[in-house]
Image (tube, rainbow, N blue to C red):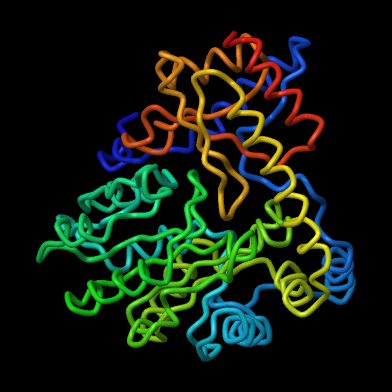
Length: 385
């Protein structure tokens, strides 16, 4: 069988490869602690589950509009106005199964072969994968520890050319948990408006923020028409397996993204969309309690890692990852991640799983219990000692 040449340009997520190896070790009897997968370890709140069950029993089991159920799109538009502070019409919303389709289809709709896309590195690996897949040119902008893993706006200016079609930002950020400031967003917006560049703003960790209030670049003057805002229900509502997300964009682009969905998945699952309405309009106490617990875990894992010789770790402002600097161990980060899994039975990811500028770092998710986090840190400490 001969695959299409484009398949050679398609990447993957190392987290799932590490998860598979960790599961294999568990089958061999090793007690692995999982800090590799970016998934809340909390159950979906009961009122959301109840809404899905009610929808199933009420006949929400048929095809729906490709762009999403009108009532759900209206609920999302209302949520965006309240949470991000700018008005949105339902026809500017496209509901999709998870968050990745907005990355895939947004890039597919806007990027021609040879067009350049600036993306954060280290960063979510699907960005680079999709840019390559459509024949675009990935242009990485380094996220540096010395500025708390925010992008350097002066570097961004130097990377912009007449071929730049899109800038991708992610705040709070995976894998570093860096958070862009208002000044950062304003400077990025100025660049985008001056050069007529679309910004893909990936915001699934909007609520998982420990300091300040989340701000979307789409809310800045002139940026609504220049932004694809991506959000999903996986993180805030612990709904990873439900596969529910959406994009907010100008209505002309929304119609094109909906057309891509027609050609790919037809529509997002109808009863899951009813659960999405319950998530947006229901009580937020479960989500707020989850974020409070994440903050507690953040402090436990940061303090524990900083007590290990050769490791230094910033205290994140959002998301539920730490991105410790491990250069002081003298071990390559990929080799170190393998060693920690094979010899200490703790599953972590190398920084290079998120791009070349992740060299010298590891990513650990603290979506696990305090007890397991303490045990994981203890095992790593013993291994490196």
